[in-house]
Length: 150
Length: 248
Image (cartoon, rainbow over all chains, first blue to last red):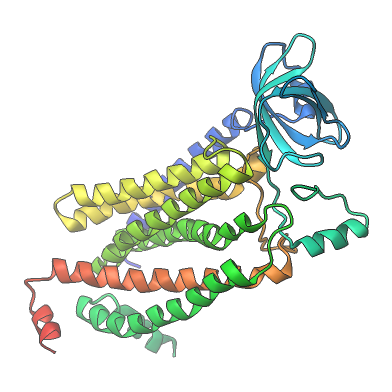
């Protein structure tokens, strides 16, 4: 490699190193703010104050869903297997919402400690399998969300 | 052996050589694309079983995931070619690097739109500003930036150097896209296909995905040759070798 080319190569790599380091620091500084949602554990850690607007994510605790008979209101518990949080939501839930399903609720924390959601999104996991395989896994004792309409 | 390969490799830097060779390679690459993409699409859409939770909507994976990989890989290829072009100042490499940008931008747009269409029935939303989606959108802007910068400068050799530097700097976004689902909590799920360890997609569903991964690579190579050749034709239209090529 000629000296000119070597110089050019190092100049470009130096620029990339600089930009890379800057971005790395930016990403590190953003680490908490770039979270899309808080888990119940993170929520307890940060001691979120009442009235704070944020997103709460986790699994719908099996057996925790209670629907109001008079309205579209629904109460459920979001868990990350360590901590739990009561949630109230009034509106239409996504099709994939069910017990044992990952969900993300955005809303505010009420003074009484209940999370009032204004939007509930279903979070899908990275597992893909045909229904028969899912049945076989359930028989083997694995916990899986139930199929739609079941 | 090595010397022979080196000589052969260096010849690609010559525009007339590149033009003739790529014309010959292109046919095979296009043929390869068709014979892999069509069965992959057919299998993905009609043959493989439905997913236990999502039903048929999961079939978007056969387009979305290979496109997402290509959107990132092409950016890497563009940056690498730009680095070579910046250091060695080979004109064919400059043109090749710049020919990557529209192909990558198209794959990024496909990734974003298919993801959005799948997100509505699955998540309940078309768009959310989570780490994965935002960084992929930035990737699209970077591609558009490279294309715009290349078009904005009159002298094509200077333009390729400026846009190439942007491509090299933009590479820092690639690990952010990849690791976004691990570093932060995101609405987007984690990786299904893992390089280390078992993948979380059932074996009965994986064949069309892998076939599509091959198809998109071949498509990229074929389009890259075609685009580079077209740009060579435009830039060298007054040169003698073009007349010889066209005459033969």
